[in-house]
Length: 450
Image (cartoon, rainbow, N blue to C red):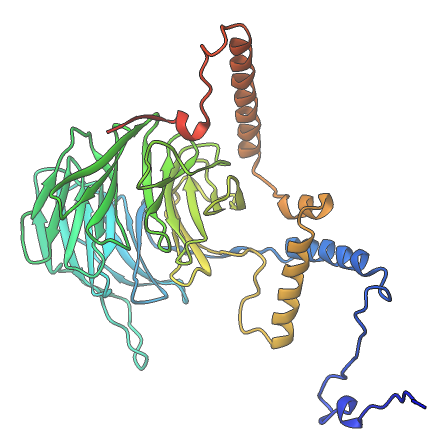
């Protein structure tokens, strides 16, 4: 005869210390827990609502400039340091943790149009409308002694050239940097004249970026609506295509260096595969005015954009619409944006002379989290992700309050798009079959590939 006996050891449920949590044993058999999905759905709704309640993305503003901020650069060797340049020629080094100026670099006689930092973080390159390129030594802070605010009045080198400059970027792991203006010039730290110069019948080059995976490849955009890719090993341009509107900035995906995203004047961003330039991989919509700057997160999973419509948006790398929008009443036209080196923060520089620090995740809790808090956050994210397709959860997660001008402009854009679609449908219906060619937006915006 068999006898089933329920037995349990006191060690399994007795607390070792008075501060310990009482262990609770649960039976996860779905036939016993008939309301499990309903309970999880309610938890998902509550988690989405709590995320909205605790969404406080704005951390603080850094003021000190007396003119519009035109460009920024991260220090890849220092997590909390960022450089900014303004239209009056002032360059500042900021400490993000304390939100104060660490150092100033005076010298430019006109607007600073480009900043770049060497890979080791020791040399800052600046260029501007005064037709000069300046190399500055970056102050090194130690753990024992914090830097005091100081002025590095003398640059290491000053190179004077024929034309004004609009952009600069430093090559990864080498002593070369590229400037954009009337053409593309490749410079060396130790030479006062360019090593190489490229021209491809373009107008002014407005942005320039080196590829993080292949240091000899760089992409440029020009005011004649063209985007070109150059290979320094070939000594000549590699590829070029022309879009319908101008591209203001370019950023390579650091995790997939064959892909780059272009911030365009038509309020959209376009992601391209550098091996297939006749169509965009993805079109990122939501801005209602020209996109001025773009920067990828170090993770490569998302990027941040700043626009003339006075908003900052965060997009997934493969998402058609933004997952987040940041704005304040005082923030004016955003000219430059950057992700922090740890992907936790976003820094924006705007027309109102301020740098603003935002959290990359609006409801993220700052500071050290207890293990229980961390598990709770992870659980909330998991249930939200599980029920994100259901209407109520989807509505709460997507909802954002927009400034009235942005809201009205978005409605106008939707109306214009719908009107164009109806017009195209009518033209197609009243034309001979096959005479009206229908192209997707990804191809329609590209005029010619060379």
